[in-house]
Length: 64
Figure 1: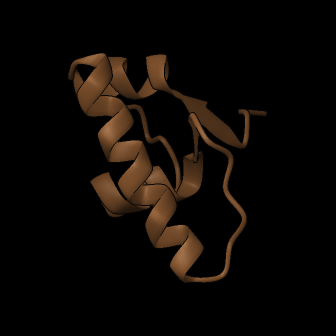
Figure 2: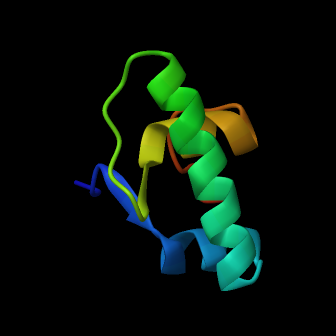
């Protein structure tokens, strides 16, 4: 079972971006979730929402 949230290192590895850009993307995703009424955790991003936004799927299907 995978963890519910991703940290900045996971986002950096999957997207192959810098730490600062990964934080920027995570902040944007968390703002979107907050606008939908969801609770968020600073420095973490919901794994399912991440994959939905970047790959159009709700799970990691081995593309990384």
